[in-house]
Length: 131
Image (cartoon, rainbow, N blue to C red):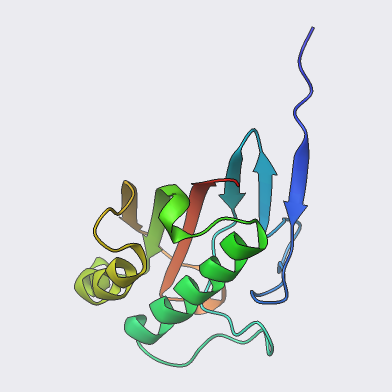
């Protein structure tokens, strides 16, 4: 007999709506699992113009909005996965990313990928503790 795990779908207007068949986040078993956040303006659903610094700032704002909608926040993140179109952008990405997590950042993986949706330069997803 398997135990049924309840899932709560998280949705907020503070982050871009899903551009495919997925949720912005799901809360299950005391954890928040976010979808990867792209540098999309949630009002216009267009990619933010600019370099990886500007795009990372938008990604982190979107991620913060999803976490807040789930009742969580950056201080409750336990793991991130970060995708960069070019690892040569790592230092600029890292500077913005580091401001979001402060002195006790979560473990993370950062990988270069061949291509991100809509030509984005960066995407970040995370797992956080739920309230």
